Length: 107
Image 1 (tube, rainbow, N blue to C red):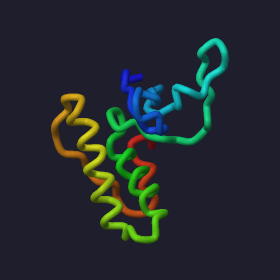
Image 2 (spheres, rainbow, N blue to C red):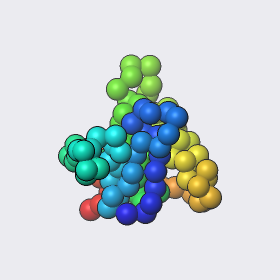
Image 3 (tube, rainbow, N blue to C red):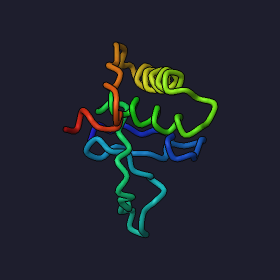
């Protein structure tokens, strides 16, 4: 766990995502004792797995008809770069290599 907390699940006004072993979990999806539910979706952490996070975000953006793959990738790169920069991590991110973008750093 890298201690990342973010806003990936839509809360907007408070951090609602937490990184556990490189995957983001919805901090609001838990039982009465605070145990997080595993939604079994591999949402990569933008801090631990930036290349995978770019691929995931690009795949999510590509569901919209008006985004071509190049534009979806550029938007995803910008988003992940901004998330990292806001936490003091500056530096290049490698874009995912073709095909299924959501694999890579975990393999």
